[in-house]
Length: 252
Image (tube, rainbow, N blue to C red; front, side, top):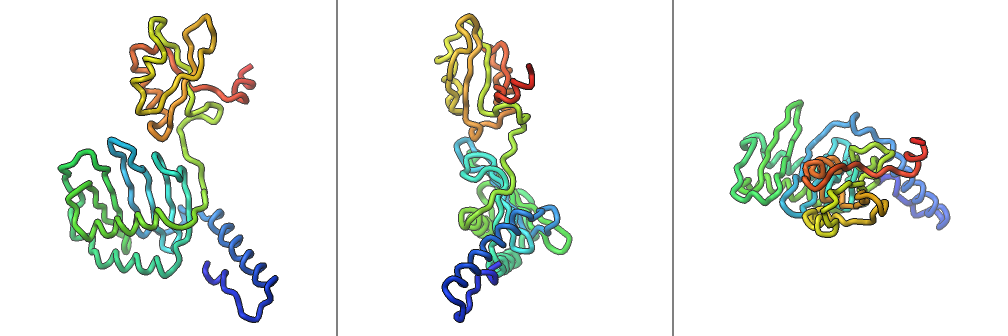
């Protein structure tokens, strides 16, 4: 990819601009058409959830220098994003992985701090793989690999390849729910128990019934988990995802 950006001294200004622009668009086109299933993995890291707003994502480095970042919750990049880290950075990462000798460590480390996110690193080498999972208490070599992968995740320009999966049919709005509450329930007071999900009552759908439109943060809770929790709420009689306008028109 970097070779595409090379500019010769003999080229004129207009030629330099054209060649540089062509190189940038060529890189973007290659990234857009990349099928990650056809690539060979070098190392991946999954950052799990914690009790707070820890970023939840998986980053995977492939043998051609392509890196995939799949953001799930509490991250600016949700869905699958990819970029090329280049041959030199890939070579340096591989050297660190070999030096770490991850195969000599246990697969899991017990934690003394339950609030920390679980970090899972999987290393691929010569047809075999090694998984190391833990929170605190992991050896310095493992922490070094985590630090390098976090650095890759937080740097560079990423190209979105796939929108985030909500698990909700496209006719529905994942962050909106229609909730039928018990008539004795005060919606504003009821919603406080879902403060962690940033739930707010938007409006009453009709003055003659107890159906309410509510919105919440899908970063805070996956839509299907939110729906499941609502159905277990004793104050909720019925709950469903709100439908998009197109979905409602097709139902008529």
